Image (cartoon, rainbow, N blue to C red; front, side):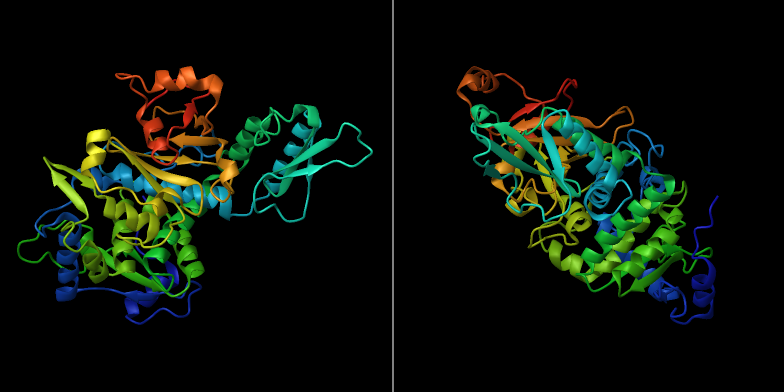
Length: 461
């Protein structure tokens, strides 16, 4: 079993009771003890569970961030248990996908471009390496007089280059947003290179980046606090509080640089992903201390007294705690990097406050989905999907629900066009008594009336 206390020079400096300035990550170490630690314990329990006398259930105490097998079909994914912890795991999963698809640089970039060249060779497409990507999505350029029939060149943003599809003017009826019949294969290859071919070390790097993103956003881009466990108990539970064996042992490490926090998290990533580490609760504590307990209370206001709901022995997440993970605030006032979609049935949606447009249209095409109270992730490999309305006519989405029985990423095609030959299908879809899969209904909260194809997968949710 891994030792989950801070290691090396960080641990030695903390034992000496002074700030840590000599180690590479340069955090400031705080070791709450005695009455101060007891107050922290009370405040954390009250803010999370609504009452300092309550403790986390066994499934929450056991929860940690566990990846699927490295270099496998789902190497990028976290396993999510049933129950309330699944919502937090899936919110972190969304940040992991963001990092792997759109943030990190990999040695696979040239492979993606090479495959696009290969697919282009068999479909009339070529890749233009270098040069800026078009900011407005696919564009058309008419050919010169050397081509009497005229040709239209469609530039499609892809990976580190751009795919150019050339077609005769006589085929203008073809949708330019799907320049090549092999494009789904190209997108699946992007998925494979960036998400599936990752090692255990890269999994740890992705998790560290995902956690750091949430903590840095919670600190408004000015700081982050990482909570780890010490070997020895720092305090005894105050009167009215039941000891839980880990909250009494917390150490706080404060950072003023995001890179330092991310590096520190990676150095101690086993404290969040090992069995017995209490990794998920440590992340929640880190999130609250990064935001500060006072600010979280203010943001909750009178809407909800606490972040987790306790009912019949079950502990579930409120939307506020999910927004803390996704946007760094229980009440975000600006566009977040990862979005949120929700569908719980028409009656439930009428009772709940609406999901705002800023959450439906994030900076990256990734959404945490709450579907009938169960959480999952929906995403696109096309970074420009939400930056140009033309991209949103026909496009591909991928879906992961966190359940162990899902062995492949589901591939969906979404068509927001209204075509005359589809009138019969649209009428059938709107027939009374016809039940659409709940995932499709969640997608339509963002793209009303969209037709969704599961591409041969049996619809679920």
